[in-house]
Image 1 (cartoon, rainbow, N blue to C red):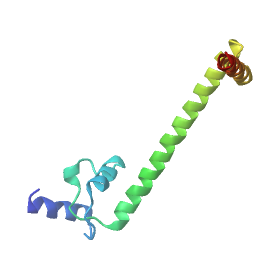
Image 2: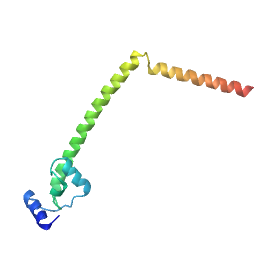
Image 3: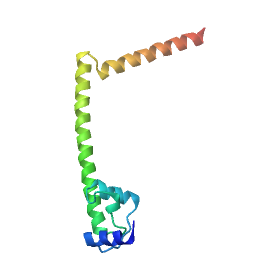
Length: 114
């Protein structure tokens, strides 16, 4: 980035330069829509600008997690309805599993006595 471009970017955003953003900070600034491209980000920004971008990123991440949780809830509901239609339940599955273990234990005890 040339020196004139840096000065122009600082003047365009009226930035009191005091913080050098890291690569991750730059990605946050881009993701939150503060800047259009990475070249538009000045070499030094105010901490307040970064705080606002981080807060906006936190809110966006929370909205994404909420949406994923709702989708997961509907997927579990659909899966449970299909299992109920097949007459499957955790109780039956657990009882069958324990019966299988008892059978295996009885066979193992029987083979030891021989």
